[in-house]
Length: 332
Image (cartoon, rainbow, N blue to C red; front, side):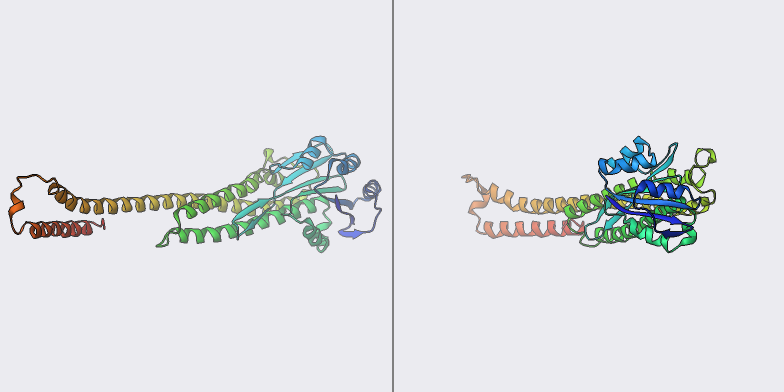
């Protein structure tokens, strides 16, 4: 559905015709005006009129409708198409969720298509409407502000993931170590969330490098203002720091998992040693009792008056000796 349709001129929102075609015609008659249409999870039928009026490329339209795209930047004859994946993180459940924002910019128009709840573009629109100097740069300003908002939230999510990972690390290396099965499951789930985060941040580096002018031998991207490179460079720098943070988090969670598995293995070895020690201590009296339980007729100790207390004392002495030996070696 169409969430908003507005005409901007000289950095200000102005009243205009409600019809998309009339709004676009009006903007093209004025050099400093453009129309911005925002859509939320449109159907193919709802998007047909927008496609027809703005001349959007069929392949880009297909991507915008189907979603599930990776971040990318594509240039067509009449428009520029960019895909971004905003993310959100729920610390209580340790879950990273992602949505998608598709941005079409062209001659005097911007079309934004949003999938998911992770990137409310209303806040971006309000921010721009309070910054007329920025909005005067036209569709490029919209593209930059959306990219800036998405990447800035990446920074927040990376910080939250780092905080939760520090708590998880403290839990793993605590004296109790947490429940082995529960902790391993949580570590693995955390690693999956980092992978989901990386799917959004990693592929965005290449599109931003093109907007900065460092991609494709520094070629200029059409429909983007000539003076916008420093702004996109700032967004690219923030994204680079985010990607470095994500790589660090991924390495750290892998190290934590390895350490947890090593701790589990050590605890299991300790348990096996303890069981073996108690079994050895139980074997001595069992063996002696077994020998004297065979009921042979000719056993020299059977007629001796002190046989019973002597054997009990011998078994007790051996048990004490074994206990002290195993205790000294840390098996008990």
